[in-house]
Amino acid sequence: MPVLSPVNTALSLLRQLPILADVPEPDLEALARQVVFRNYAREEEIFYQGDPADRVWWVHTGRVKIIFHDQDGREVILEIISPGEAFGGAVLFFPTQPATAKALEEASIASFPSELYARFLLDHPPVTLKLLRMLGARHLSMINMQILAGERVERRMAHILYKLANRVGRPEPGGTLITIPLSRQDLADMSCTSLETAIRTVSRFQKEGMLMTRRGGYLVVTDMERLKELTE
Image (tube, rainbow, N blue to C red; front, side, top):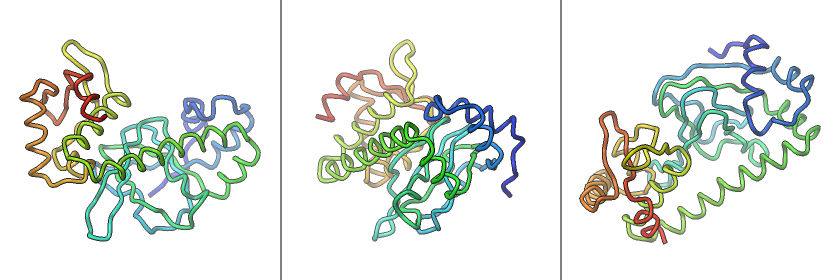
């Protein structure tokens, strides 16, 4: 069950969010009083596609994947949300959630009611602008994936890996470590292909020197330039 958080804990989280960097302290304190935290297990749903869009969510720890269920029942991973990032912003535009949110790993998630969210945005135009830019970037990413849907699976997979390496990658000797564990099924869902095709594509990227696998589902991109070329 969600638990109303101690104000100091919530305030500490809100101070860490780049989107709220310029909000006055009294306004942050008022927002913190309404924040609730909940812990989610790996693969536990936070909300389902079609649920009422009545809360806004922020990742405290862990990561969340946003999934769209198409008419054929397939799951397509649209986005991965990292600590400090918001999701569920569809409350600005839709009465129900257009996608499902699921914990990619154990996660602590903060949320507050959509009515409070709307009032807060009206009172803080700079935050609204930052939020719209963030939502716009995600929408553009989804458009790009729709465009890529008709392309070869190698290009789609390269696009996903290149994007992840830039967003959540960490440089290390020999390449860029994607810092979240990804199963082959995750990669298949993100690139709109079958599990078998995802396995073959990852194997090909390994043989061609673009990718290494690590224990625990971690991937290391060993040739970013070559991977980028495949996306173009």
